[in-house]
Length: 194
Image (cartoon, rainbow, N blue to C red; front, side):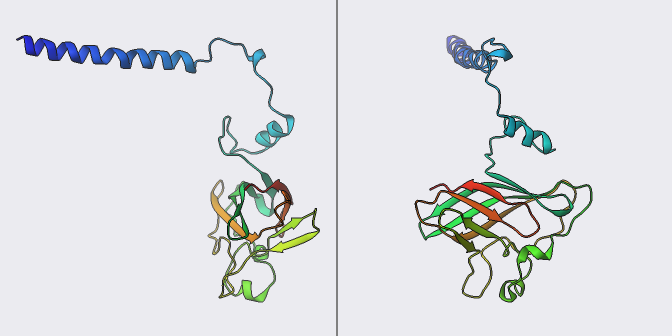
């Protein structure tokens, strides 16, 4: 009888710390009672870009480096641009159809080089511009001439997005800011990390 009581008592006692932690967590998450006037305002540019995009959500943890608008409701959001030890830069993001109809990815995004076009649809027409060094970098290719980018795009339905990447030769280490150019899209300027 006393063993059963002790087990029950332990069960009840072990539940108390959990209840206290949960209660404390709820109070801490509620913000402590400050008014909205105490909070700093977001920058105008950030709020405008969030309002213009239907998929933008408050508290989006993903940092947006640049946004490029394309034809037929296509929208390219650049989220990372990192230098790699191998001497190249990988630019990644999401290609989204913000339009109301299904869209085929334009063939112009592959560029006009025969070797790249022969390997199917891609982002092979993208270039990275170093305004400081006044140089333009083209998408890297493997030994078979295939571009080091996302390839063979499906048609994108309304609201659908697709993760994409492109790899370029790295500009000099002292170059941080670059501009991405993609056929039929607006340009986007951002900083390389790493």
